[in-house]
Image (tube, rainbow, N blue to C red; front, side):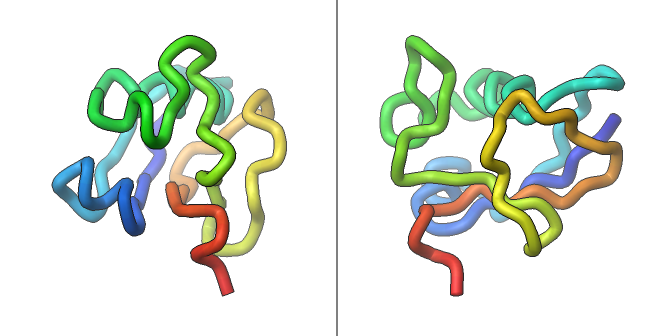
Length: 92
């Protein structure tokens, strides 16, 4: 499955791009996405992703399709979803 990930704020600055596509196995979770982001963007480790637990730091969150906050990283992602990685207070 492919997830379209958009980066906002610090995530964009560290990634050096505004978005990317991450390919994951079918049935993957948002936790799998965070792990993949840590591999693809090692600068995320520390400021955005905790290097030991591979959890998002408290100041960051994932948002799906601009509508729903991901509260459970173990929830299954769906092919084609647009996922925003953003500072938790950047919403509206």
